[in-house]
Length: 161
Image (cartoon, one colour):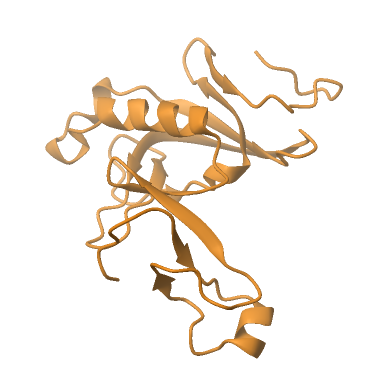
C-alpha cells in the first residue's frame, strides 16, 4: 500500500458483492473512493488506521492506552492497563456479549497499522479491534469505566459499571 497524503482513504473488502462486480479491486486500498458495492472509509490518527465510523472518544481512549504502552516492544507492557472491550450495535445500543480482555497496542506492519488487543503482557500476536462496534471499555482491575457509547441499551442486564 502506498503512503496516503490525505484523509480519508478507502478499502474495498472481500465481500460477495465486491467479488461479483469489482473482483480486480477487492482487497485493495485507495486514496480516492473507488466504484464498488461496499467501500470502507478510514482515517489515520497518530499513525494508527481507524474506520471513519469509530467514535472519536474511542479513538482518544485507545490512543491514550496505546501511548501508555509505547514500550510494548521494549518489554514494559507490565505497567500498562489491562482493559475489557465490549462490542455491540452502535445504532441500537445492544451488547452482543462479545468481550475482549487485554492490553491495547497496534500492528507493526509497514503500511497499515490497526488497533490490536493482546491477551497477555507476553503475547506476540494480538486480535484486531473492530473499533466501530465498541460500546464499552472498562479497566480490568477496579472496573473503572473509560468509555460508554451513548446508545448503550441500559434496559438489558448489561448495565454500565
